[in-house]
Structure formats: C-alpha cells, structure tokens
Length: 189
Length: 188
Image (cartoon, rainbow over all chains, first blue to last red):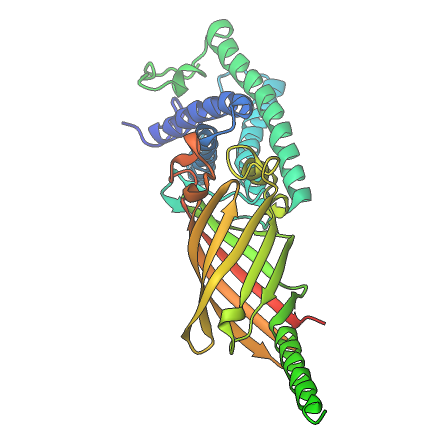
C-alpha cells in the first residue's frame, strides 16, 4: 500500500481522507436538509446530535487532511491540461478546504450560540464557542445555510470535472483517486 | 373602675405583641430573588430560571408554628436561554403552560434541623399534579432583611413533565435541581 501520493496516483491516506469526508459530507447534506422537518421529540434530538457529532468528525478529518496536504505532494496534472482548467481545479480544491472547515465551525458556533450542549457521539463534552447569543446564532445559521449552497455548487463542479476527465478526456484523474485501483504502469495521462 | 386600666393595658399589650409578631414575621420578596433550576439534556447539564414568581413569606425563627410560605410561579416565564428548548419545555409534552400557566408551592409544618436551617413539609403543584415534599432551607437574618436559600431535587416524572417519548432519561434527565434564593424585607 502506497501511503504517500506519487506522480501517478494518490496515496492511501489521501484517498481515505477524500472518500471518508465525501461520504460524510453527502450524508450530512441530505440529513441536514431534511432533519428540520422531523416531528419534535427525542428522536429528532438524537438525529441532531448525530449531525453535530458527524460535523465535528468532518472538521477533525479536514484539519488532518490540511496538515497531510502540507507534506503530501499532488499527482502530476495530466499533460495538455489548459491553464484555465488548472486554475479551475486549484480553485475548486482550495474552496473545498475552506468550505468544509467553515461549515462545521459555523454549525458548532450556531449550536453554542443557541445554548445547546454538545457531546461527541455521547462520549465527551465539546466546549461551547460562545455563550447564548441571539444575534450570533442568527449569523452562524445564515453562514451554515449559505455555505451549504456554495458546497453544493462546488460539489457539482467537482463531480462534473471528474467525470469529464474520465469519460471525455479519458485520462487517469478520476481513476487515481479511486480506492482499490492500481495505476497502470507509466500511466500519467 | 380600678381594673379597667389593667384590662385596657393588658389588651393593649396583647395587641401590641400580636401586631409586632405579625409585622416581624411577614416578608416581601425583593428584586434579586431568583428561582433557578438545573436539568440534564443528553447527559449535559443546563440551567434555567423563572423570571416571574411571587412569594408570600411568613416566618419567625422564634415562632415556627406561625410560619407559612405561599409561592406562585409563572410557568410561562421559564427561560433556559435557548428558544428551541424553551418552546419544547413550555409545550404540551412538558409544562403545557397554555393549560397550566401557574405552579403553586405552599408549606405545612416547619421544624428546625440545625441553627439557621429549617425544613418545611411542603406541597408543590406543577401542571395538575400535587406532590408532597420536604423543603429544607437556610434562613439568614441581616440588618435590613433576611435571605432564604434552598436547593431541592425533584423528579420531573412526578409532575408528568415530559411523558411518552420524552420519558427516556438519556434525552432529558429525570432529576431536576431547583435552586431558590429569596431576598426578603420585613413587610411594611
């Protein structure tokens, strides 16, 4: 198993972080959009506490990923990739780092300003980022909802680009991030 | 005719005594008095309080048999600094403040349990449930008044607060600690 990223393929640490965060983010986006409609009760409270715990998990994974990214190289860009595409790719990836860190922090802040307790999967208490504060609560909620929409947009671009690389450009950009896929030798296309 | 002044003065003395003891034993609640509670949500403590409550306090440490507390609590003034939680708490599953806007606390007999510490047999009615409980408190007299402090542990289920799906102690703890601090001035 190749832990670190090479010129040909993403390392397994980067792959693990990418896919675990991807799955969590998609679950969170679906859950987050629907959980508000649940009937008030202990079940709703449980769903919210799961949402909060998963959000904190994403935050931790994103911070790990950010640190790992500082030491781990990126695979080479496929040859012939235009300047605009390169800039677009860099922008989308950088946006994800910012958005997926801002998103859980805004949720955490929203929770703190709402004066709800927070226990990570019921295991340990997470400190509040602020005291009860109506204005801050409103602000954090606005950020949380706006960033949701931005993430949705960036996610669509990201997936569309991956599929374009795979099916139209027929290069290895998607394949080299897939789990359990070995690069073809010398495949840097 | 000779006796009259004695009768009159005795009567006067009695009236004076009664007058004094009544005046000395009646107290009015001052601003700064608090009625707070501490509960648990998903294993984490939270605190709240009632912004509006009225206490009628008659208390003289030297005449416990005359002591009487009557406190009326405005349930709608409950506040835990969390609008979602407060809404649920005042809703039909918990306090149901629309149907039961007031809680009532009243005492029976008092006894001294230690210097400056007393205990009253009391009844607390929340919603339509009246529960008998012991109410231990401390009484500290000061130059211009007195201070009463008490801490009582209640079980919310005794009062049908949070029944049905909400009975689960993991989501909302059964134990609720009520903290009372009354700042009192002799009634005018």
